Length: 116
Image (cartoon, rainbow, N blue to C red; front, top):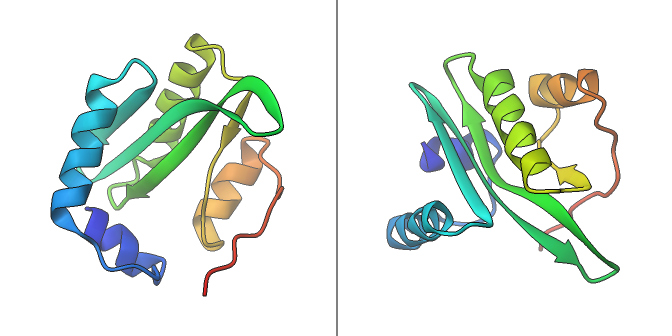
């Protein structure tokens, strides 16, 4: 699914399956990490402070759904983040339907990520 995610957003990096597996395993074993999986989707993330504030922030590290489970995955991630004391939830998307889903949930554009 990570390869399908990278392809769907025209990701700038090649998927390294070993690194992906190591990261997923690490998130699953960490009190500050989480991975939720549906039949055709997943969301993975972690909680950490930012460099500008010590408050915990939930960072989505990957989110993809091809089975219409995207909203349920987001809700699970938000519930987990709230239970861990996160003050913000940061989600990424490439526009389109994903952005509309996030906006309907109250998310707003805060940054634009540039790659080179």
